Structures are given as structure tokens and as C-alpha cells.
Image (cartoon, rainbow, N blue to C red; front, top):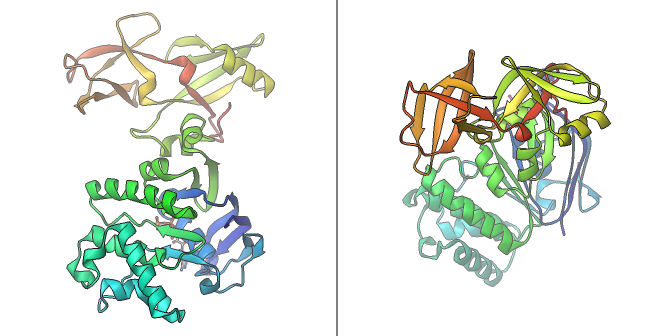
Length: 364
Ligand code: ATP
């Protein structure tokens, strides 16, 4: 059992850099949690505080209801896998994996059992006698993970473990890590700046910006109900399209005024907005690329010029502009649509997002 609770956690470095601000998070036993966000948002600092490698400036950290702020890293029952693997170059794979156990004065037989078992799980049995330099990046990564597995920790912490691998290997290792989580049945906290990795790995995702948690939710909810413009733009490739528009409320009805058109909002939005007493206001309108259709109808559609069309095989991306706003459309492949063609598009108005223009907060 290893639930983890972070309560009002702050990390301030010298010169008043606030790397993490008032972070609250309850991680369930056996959960796979991913911390994601742009460079410098405080992900690694958060992970290092959980590991005990970084002092907590303020707030409380609990592992299994035990406050561990002042507990040494080695006594936290946690293993960490680093981005650069941190293998000992002069030791064999076997010794790299056995090292931590030897320090803990485990018996030779027990160490051997654990190393062989971990090597089997990771498919690296045949490399046990090699030195790290004689391994590929992917194999080194497995050894780094193996070194964590042998310790049989309650919690696995992983800091961008796949970022040094090429794209193909990264995809493969992603699946391996999911299988590993299932097999080990322990709590994982995983740091990445890659939103695809976050979406595919996490039971829940923690999206951070400038040291502040912006949303904690399942991949599906983060995608479908982003809490603000930042999350909406960060999660999803290609990015959500954003436009300036007006939300107008009259006699209990809500309309969007966008690009010369007035659109009646559907009942679902109206009910939500009414219950929250949302007023007329300038908004940022968010539309995912797949929520725009190419249409033959002229009514309620916008004519655009195809600036670039990218054929991806089973789908295509069309890059264009509405007024001076960039727009990307994801459509099924149409070989008849080429650069500089004029096409008509319409928005799926029941799938849009509306954010307060000033605060960026989702109005729904
Ligand atoms: P990346 O994806 O680039 O690793 P990150 O989200 O993991 O970024 P952190 O490494 O946690 O971000 O850094 C958060 C902030 O704290 C950054 O502004 C960084 O410059 C600052 N910071 C990190 N370590 C220190 C340190 N030892 N001393 C001072 N400031 C630091």
C-alpha cells in the first residue's frame, strides 16, 4: 500500500524562485500519476521532493499517512529512474542492478534472485555481463528501470525516462512501462513534458504551469473538459484553435457572435451557463481541429483558403486562417483538396469550448 498526499507544498529556491506553489494532490495506492507541463513548470522539483532529494520549503508530504518531510530518501521505500539513467559505467549490468541491494546488506542469494527476476521482466538477461557502454539507449533505460525494480519499492518515480530514446523506441517503451505498472502493481509518479506520453500513460494527469497545478484529472476529462485556456492548448495535437468571440445572454438564451455570425448555443450549454449565472462577455472560443467539418453548405459556414494540406495517411490536416487567426482542421483524407483551394468549413457548435477572455477559465 502506498498512497501519497501532498498538502499545501511550496518549494522556494534561493533568490526567491518559487518553483512549486501551494501544490495539493492525493495519489491513490497503485495509481499511475503523470506530472506534465512545459519546461520549468516545477515537475522535477515536485518529484524530487517526494523522493526526498529536495527539501520542502513549506507544506506536508505523507506516504501512507506517515509524514515524511524529514525522512531520508533511503527510508521512504521509493525508487527513482532518472532521465540520464545514472548507471555506473565501470560496473556490469548485473552489478549496476545489484549495487543498491548490496549496500542494504542483502544476502547474495536474495540479490541474485531479485536481479535475475527483474532482468527477466525487462528482457535483459543476456546483457547482464556487459558494461553500460556496450548497450543501446533502450537497453540502458531497461537497466535503469531494473535497478529500481530490484528494490521492490512501494513507489516508483520516473523523471522523463524516455526522453533520450528515438521516437520508435519511445513508443515501444511506453507500452512496456504500462505493462510494468500492471505487473508490479505499485504507485507510479511519472514526469514528462510530452502530452502524448501523459495522455497514454496516466490514470490521472497533473498539468502544471509556472509552479502551479492547473488541472488534475483523467486523460479523457482533461481533453474534453479543460479547466482553462492553457490546459486546452497544451493537451491535444494539433493544438485547439482559439478565436476571439462574444458570448451574449438575452432572455435566458445564449448566443455566440463570431466572425459576423450569431450562433444559438445548445440546451446543454444554456443550462450550465444559467445555473452558473454566466453573463454576456468577451470570450476565447476554443475549437478542436476534429470539431471542424468541411461542408458543401453555404449557410453557417466560413469560406477559407487552404494554405497547406498535410496528408497523414488515414487523415489530413488543413492549415488556413479565419481573418488573421490561424486555424487547423483535422479531416478524413480528401485527395481533391489542395493548396490554395477554397473550401467551406463549419464548426461543430455542440463541441466547442468557451473561456473567459481575461482569466482564461473555462465557463462551463
Ligand atoms: P524541465 O522539464 O525543463 O526539467 P521542470 O518542469 O522539471 O522543467 P524544474 O526543474 O522543477 O522544472 O524547475 C522549476 C523552476 O525551479 C525553474 O524555474 C528552475 O529554473 C528552478 N530551479 C530548479 N532547480 C533549481 C535550483 N537548484 N536552484 C534554483 N532554481 C532552481
